[in-house]
Length: 202
Image (cartoon, rainbow, N blue to C red; front, side):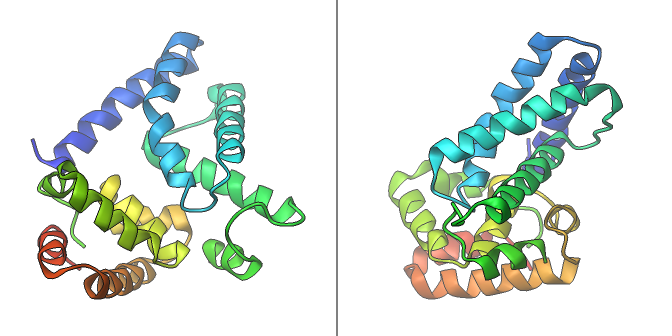
């Protein structure tokens, strides 16, 4: 099963849980939250290293979503949750004095401002040494490039979906990916870059 098919099936399952939750099924809502929690937590680390703050933010969006479930329409569950968390984090960053994230005020403002990865990327992820080195390299990228790489590589979103989530245009997504790829190329040894580049197209 390729990644695109897996993503479609996963969304269908999450939508099934969501529709049950809309009808008042708390168990289904808890299953949905548990299934998405790790991805949401990982996504939030692109914005801040404060684990307690991340946990509180995730809890807050799920409480709000549950309260508004009967009037909320969702087509892509993961994208909706990522965007909800992103908005929650950015609102908190702007309210906090000093800012609680690892971002400076300019980066927070900017945040508002490759063909889908195939399953072979799992070969890199399966090898602990390669995984460590790839993620080390990704962590050196500017925050917006990290965010785009996370959404593209680890969640398989299309450029249009990333653009809508980050509230930028599709070309900006392509530009961020291109810059990220160039940086990763310069920081990783040849065989690692070759593996990574083999799994994505601009």
